[in-house]
Length: 270
Image 1 (cartoon, one colour):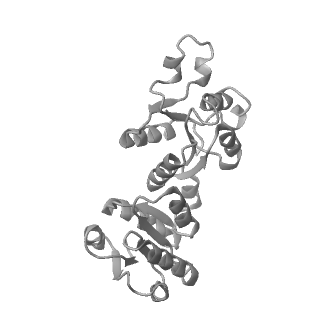
Image 2: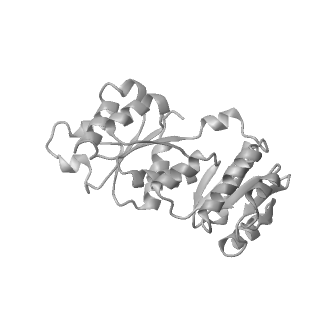
Image 3: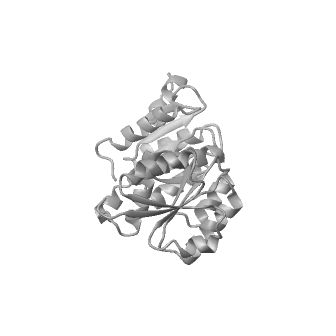
């Protein structure tokens, strides 16, 4: 990294952050550690041309004050927040506060390297070309379990994907036009016991085929078996069978492997 990248870290410098700072300092990241007890306005005043990294876990209220002060007084400085097991409402509130990225504990140096690099590029350092932005993959999660959606959203965003959620098959179909997903992660039982099957059929064989027929579908359900096994003699089984199938609860490494594989299939629109 040609230019020293200044990171204002608002956190206790011990514990996990010691390892992160030690590892990344040797790669061109210049950390300035600020005690969480410092007044939020003083932190914001010193943000300057830097990325502000705020650990919310020791004191959530004060951490959110830090985020708000930085967004108000130093809007050009991206804020990365790190939280521990946030609820759905809290995760939504943090994202709506204007943070550049919400990471989850436990954090590791490899993950923070990627996040901080993206934040720095957003400020204009080593700015990616417009073609790079176009290749950022979009994932649509269609599932009525809000906690599941929040956790999978956080997981996929950490992997660099843009994520949108829909709470029903009906809502998911509406998102196809507005969000133009590259992959659909689909539940089965939502507004009714067969809702996911219906969405799969509409995308692959029905009225949504023209706009989304190329989009792969990863069906993820508490039903242990895929449609072709559940309905082995049904003539319609092929119409409700997705590109791939996984059972809940998720095996995270396997899930991510399937997501990457489906997004890498030839002929998909990026």
